[in-house]
Length: 593
Image (cartoon, rainbow, N blue to C red; front, top):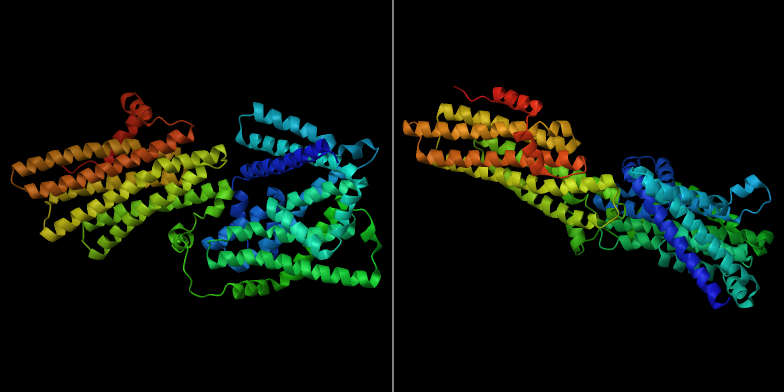
């Protein structure tokens, strides 16, 4: 092989790896995290877990991605270690789909229809369709499909380029000697494991092996140990992802390693024992891409069938390797021990669609926490309770931590390749979590006002109490509407917030005016007035934040964000629906005469 042939081979390898990466990204965007959510929920039956792991891996074309997700699930407490075993086994079976697709490159026939099955025949058509979808389609799903088609075409072109570049090596004795050396099972396994660990993809390393088989210089005796080693090498990704994680997450990564090590050992022992007895003649025959796909599939399916009944033993072995002893915790482990934030596992960032959904779930928890903080604080004005006051302080502190954790995580998520839908989700969350945090602050301020009234034995007049009750109910409905609109991404419900917020503003103006009248008549004191002003100001701020949240839901969903313009249009325009809603809320929350 001369210098230029080497350049061609390296270029083919680069295109192959880039095509695989591009296709994987397209598949991930198209799934939008749905496959990962299915993995999270449907793992009670071991057989179902195997089938699910195989199916998901076959679709996303990466056993490493599936296994890393499982390590994240276990680390987050979403999935038990025993549930993870089946998915890990299934991932090994699912990854064989790639080798079968790549084996199509070896089809040789003069028949027109058979030649159409050859990737070099149909991949240019797929590439053209993919380019057209990317250039002219405005829908995100069609663009993702286009990315997948282009990635596949690049992958197959790289495969053909590699195969063509290495074919002349069949006549090079040194190259043939190297391949023959891998007939030694230990050397073959080591070579396969190192190659896969370096490129972090068993599918890619099997593809490279299939390209080398085009020389005709590699036989089954050399290929089989390398394939076994490739399955061991793919564990490197999961083992790396387990660094700094909790015990069960590291055990999940070890289960993956033990499964492949034990499977390879058993396969080697059984196969070479049988070979000594029956002397398999096919071991000396040249292996092709189809033969590699067959061996890859047979090994992974056989390992899964044999070891699935002993999945509990793999769990026990992992637990023995990492016993339940006290150990210093890393920063990541320290964070993960808090159940409130376990969904924000950094391993999920590898699948941005799923990570965005985890952020949304966390933000919904934060929204409900802030609402509960206000509702609990409102109850203190009817009957003060010190335990509830402490609970409000706890909720406010937790809301602060939610904002910090979500904000930090979403900054990292924003650097990933997100679909348009996920990008809107992240944008909405970033706009709203600050408002929810401030709402909890106002809950704590209300608690302090209630505590001051209780400590000083202050009490409002009956009429002031009734007016404050009306205001409280209006703000509570406003907050409920905002939280529900945020949680369900409901623009119709969000549109109800601003009319009610305007009514709340009017109620506060009336409340303060009525207090001044009572003060002039000697029915209220200045000290009571200060507390009442503090309460009403905090309630007004809560309704303002509700307005911000509702406007965010409306504006971001329609791919634009002009909060000021939207509010100006409502309040200065002649929208009959808005005016009708304002009047309806005014009647509902009219102050007592």
